[in-house]
Image 1 (cartoon, helix red, strand yellow):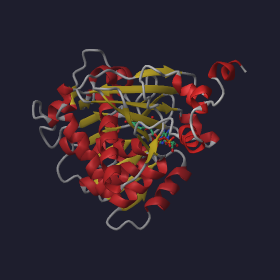
Image 2: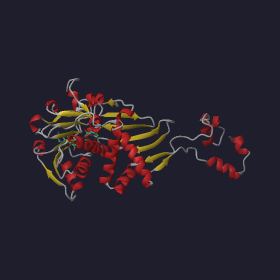
Image 3: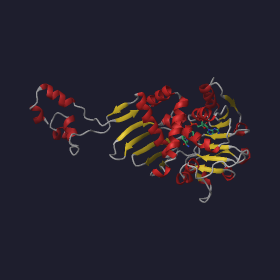
Image 4: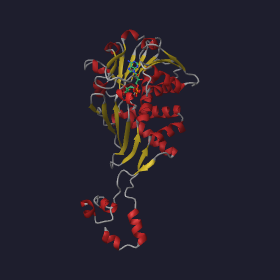
Length: 374
Ligand SMILES: NC(=O)c1ccc[n+]([C@@H]2O[C@H](COP(=O)([O-])OP(=O)(O)OC[C@H]3O[C@@H](n4cnc5c(N)ncnc54)[C@H](O)[C@@H]3O)[C@@H](O)[C@H]2O)c1
């Protein structure tokens, strides 16, 4: 390199040394970018587009190369990788679940994810997914409830008022017409936070309850979105009334569940990807031959969802990689429309793709072997 530089004039030298080392276009979306995106679109429209994208991708279920997520468990939590691909696009999400985190000022759930081009492997998008996971989980809950809850459902119980809860409340309010939400959390400060965040929203009545049983009584839809690294029994069979739809969101890990097994026995149970839910969902308490229906069959019209008004339906949600694929796809499209995000110099663009070593030479004006030895 020093020999080659010696043959250049001062301007050429300057240009050569300052040439961008990296230029493949990976779009980066920060949490602030995603918040701005939601503000610009409006939360109801953002949730609606997210739900629409998820629904459309669920209708393409057979196109996807699917697998249960890869989980690394520890004493207080789990870290998971969630990959999925179709013929053109690969996606993965990194996500954790550490219920004790809130005691030390960290969120229970944190995430980021990537979309990549299947033909070349180029990562085209790297995005925050912490905020996005809350949006996509709420949107997915609505996609399931639209197919499974009684038409005309207006009253929801919301058990667990932590980070995900406002998103659930607003998705059900804006997309499903829920106009009364009955709240319960063992931590009254969490409920006060939810009340403050959603105060003054016209057409939405919030009622604070003293117990799960009180909140659930008379509800059309019951959403459980608690976090505790234990087999909790948030819902027991005597709380369940004919016709209820249960949206079970917080039981999503081995040894971390929310429902008494008899709640599943009295319901028709719907799941995202059966092999994953058998391991992670409330379904883990039931025998391997307990009948469930994958939701995509219902959305595609291959299987019945709700068949009568008295039937109890249960969406045993654990969060499946396809929803994050859809979320990333939606973010990329909306960010393009709104001009959000930055080009991230993640992957080197090489003049000679076989000369990766040349990257070190361009970064270092001295003979590279000497510099590396120093
Ligand atoms: N299914 C999915 O796709 C999906 C996606 C994201 C998060 N989750 C799960 O949703 C849950 C909630 O996540 P978060 O980010 O809101 O967590 P968070 O820690 O912010 O909130 C959880 C709330 O549950 C409350 N809680 C705990 N035990 C309770 C009980 N017995 N009764 C009533 N309330 C109780 C806590 O006080 C807390 O306020 C977690 O378990 C998380 O793993 C699932």
